Amino acid sequence: MSAQASIDLDGLGIDAGGHLLIQRGLRDLPVGGRLTVAGRDPALRTHLAAWARSQGHQVDLGGVQPVVVKGSASTARWNRAERAGGPGPDGIAARADVRWGLAARGALIEEGGPPLNVDLIDRDLVWAEAARQLYANGLTRQWNPDTQVEWNAEFELPAEIEDAVVQVMTYLIENENAALQIPAKFIARLHPHYREVMQVLAIQVADEARHVEVFTRRALLRSNELGVSGAGGRASLQTLIDEPDFSLAAFLLSVMGEGSFLELLSFIAIHAPDPVTRQVASLALRDERRHVAFGQAHLKYSVEADRSMLGRLRAAAEHRYDTLASTAGLNQDVFDSLIILAAHSWTPDAITNGWEAVQQLQYEMDQARQRRLVQLGFPADEAAEVSALHTRNFM
Ligand SMILES: [Fe+2]
Ligand SMILES: [Fe+2]
Image (cartoon, rainbow, N blue to C red; front, top):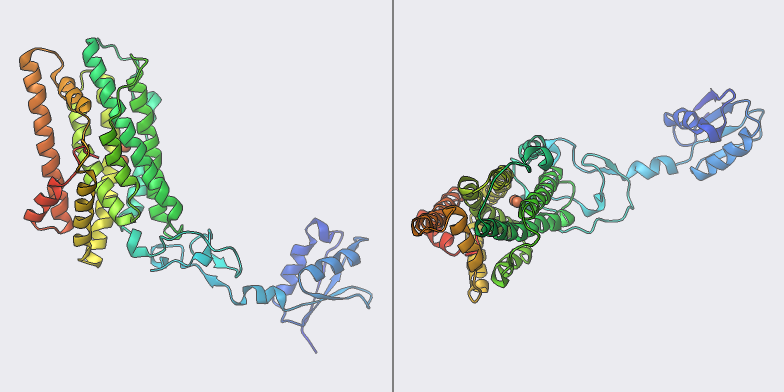
């Protein structure tokens, strides 16, 4: 005698949710178990027969009340299902299976879905323990350009000082465009199993979108035209975009490039000739610290997992240096604009001050890069050599 059970659907039709009660009634029955279904819906027998067939069950309509005989398909469907790791930090797989697709980490994965077309599937190639915290910080520290910047602040600038600001903004925008595209590109190649990394990169993309916005708004605040974009600067950025390796891109973009931008944005904030320029630079600086922190945390993790990574990082810096050897690096107009921005006026003394401030800026960028390289595990002399290879474009 096979296992039996019965349910009463009362007036509920199969097509109005009755199938849920039948599924529940079948759940604890073995394959071959019989579920008698009572009910008053006139279409009960026909709907039940159709539903049962679609679910791989049989139906016995010979008696007073129809009986569903449980088939094997509904259990077979999940027999070979596997868990895509676990939802928490301890459920992160060393290698994520592309067959898990877009499923949530920790979901029970039915066989047969389309595989995900991603190649960043190894935890150690993308991971940083700090990712969760950096995502949380990034979310709570989002800012609204409309309210956080006093766009209507009153100030008067000589036309040529304003032009210098516009030129610096023009330069910043193209760098922000690169800083947006690079994480966006890696998101599309990353297995979403590494949710925390995906979330960090997504916030980073949103941050860069906002930086593009505020630098554009500052540039257009008093001017209808933007400045110039040098081919050498764009060539420098293109080498970042072209780097296919996640860790090497994080090194070149975040540790070296955005790292240098921390000094640059501080410089602009300190020397800004007007409050709007000061505010947009300070706000962007806040976000950039997080971007650098993630790159640095990922590379520390990578180097600790495999010391040979240091050699690869050095080789990537050398390769980029060689690629850019024949280009101008930083556009002279940008360099000059930074001097003028810091000088605030055209007296020889002011220009001397501006020029010295830009020399000091480059020295500080170099020192900070060296500190970060030493933190990653480079000996001091090698850190100095690798830092010196960094692009004159700063990013
Ligand atoms: Fe940025
Ligand atoms: Fe950034």
